[in-house]
Each structure stands twice: as structure tokens, then as C-alpha cells.
Length: 127
Image 1 (cartoon, rainbow, N blue to C red):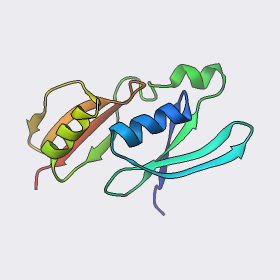
Image 2: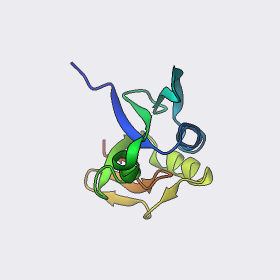
Image 3: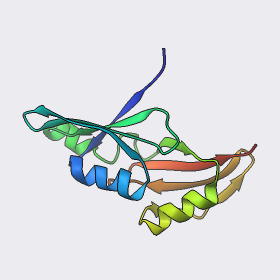
């Protein structure tokens, strides 16, 4: 068995696609109309691997959790083989980093937010 998708609550499919594909550099792997306003939207990181299922929030409980699925903690870890390249590209595309890059014993890392406030680590592990 393996994890293949992580569901991520979003307000709107198209604005989420614009961020993840247009700013964060992900690939739109699937966008299928399921009827009734629902879509199966999957974005995957540039290097492949498990994707994010962009799930439009419905109802007050889900809507309240958009942007805060983990209580303010880093939610996902986006690994890169070239931190400087990807940090520069993402910054130029308008991705909001919450801190300057840090050099830690495990690698170079910086926290960024998606358009809703979910936190991610961009990390280049120490080799």
C-alpha cells in the first residue's frame, strides 16, 4: 500500500488551481466534472509523487477549516533538490514565505503559505 493523495479543503477550485499550478509550480493532473458543481481536481508536485486532491469545502464545518487543517502547524513538506532555484521561482511567482531560508542540521528550509494560509515547508535535505 501507499498514500497517493491528500485531500486539501479549498474555497474554490479555480483559485486553488491558479495558486498551485501558476504560483507553486505543480502540475494539474486531473480536473474532472463530477456533476452538481463537484470536480475531481488533483495537482502534483513538479517532481512527481503523491498529489493533492483539491476538495471544495461544503457546509459550515468544512468552510471553517479552509486554510487551517492542522491548527497552524506545517501541513505538508515539499522536498526539492535545489532550494535556491525553487525558492527564487516561487517568490517571483508571488508565493508568500513566512521566513528567510534557514540552514538546519537536516537541510535548508523555509515555511510558505498557500493562498488560504495552510503552511508548507520547502526543504532541500542535507545530502
